[in-house]
Image (cartoon, rainbow over the protein chains, first blue to last red):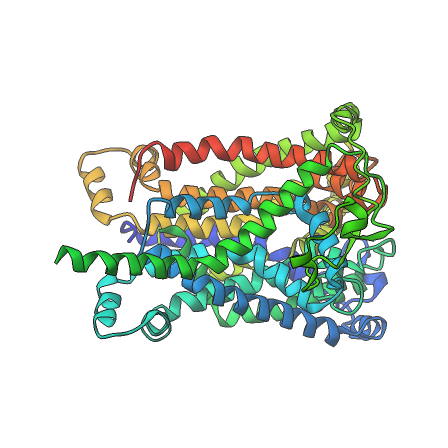
Length: 276
Length: 330
């Protein structure tokens, strides 16, 4: 809870905050607006803001050049399946860390988190070779595994903080009543942690959705998600800014919409779960 | 009673261990295995991507033990271009540190890292303190400020590449308003290009940092503010000496997130400048990548990535000791 403040201060603060918000949102807004301009208007000097001839031509061109739906579908599959798979592995792990902590629990958590700070490029080549060996290059399965692995530390960490909030006595009681390990996790712990799990799911979906390094390096055409779609427009012909904006808008639209409708879980997933 | 308690505790621990096994296994195999591989091959003169594939026994001149060969466990091909096994000692490292491009990469990463760390903290905290005073439409505001974080670095890079373009970005708008002499073209100026990338990075990451800090501030008891006010302590002093020390756990979380953002600057550079103009915005990850996949000089790439791993280890290990080793908590 914050301190009480006077009405004037409140209005001033609101104004400042919204000024900042506008500045932050402006690049996104500009991209969306530009996607509806013609190429000539997109680079006109001085720039036109709202009063231009709105056109959908860029979207048509982008769609014609590359099949948006295929990329979108790949993104959905990759982000969705890798997140769910990560949860399946992480829930038991987080359970054991939260309720049966040992001397090393903190160390393991820290070590896991520290892997998030390691440069991904350090393991790119070994994984690349592995992928050649196993025939996983440019396959959804391979990417799902990699995305799941790189987000696993965050999933475990977030779940751990949520589980810590749940009183251990409840689990103990269920154990007394004869619940086995599986029942305990599946029917007692998971239902209680649903809000936390939802936030974790959402955040990791976004992280997996945005992962560019691995998706760009391990895919070619078949399994490429939206990050590859947008990257393909950035190359030398990057001067077609209206089309680039249209492609960007198409790439970010799903996540913006998802974010808008799940504001509460998103913010909580990002804050509450990570703070404790 | 005591005899009864023991096996139960053992069983509990056993369960816990079983539950944690999948996670530990995956982490071990991928991160430790991958890193070891990288370190070992940094000492070789490996040049090419795997060209030739050999079977296990051809490669090591050791017959596969019969009990393994039976289920065909080792009967897969091993890429040999990389396993040229010509150990060259520290040659790759000497070449690395003699390379101008590597030095520039390191400098860029240092500048980006330091600025991003300090600025994210300061901006994030100031915004959070502002927001903590209860503004209107707070939830909507938070969502908007989090939006950049929901965009990938690729999109971020492209958007900012364009906003910072002198011909139709900020520079042209300000000039259009009458300030003809105004110059702001960070992406086209060798000396400040890294700051252009920094702006985009901050834009992308600060919203999240702010939200974390806000949650931390909200977690602080109102009574502490009251007590400070009663004692007549000025607000800035309350923040500096009471609130900030109390937010230590939040700061640690924030640090982890900022650090993982710094490591990922590669994406941003690729999307915004591809290392240009010239080589002025190169970063270490890109050096590694280019040597491995474009110049096909694996040894050099591995040497560079080993240096990166080493650098991270140098930062993390002492910090980990301070944080977790020094005093044993829970």
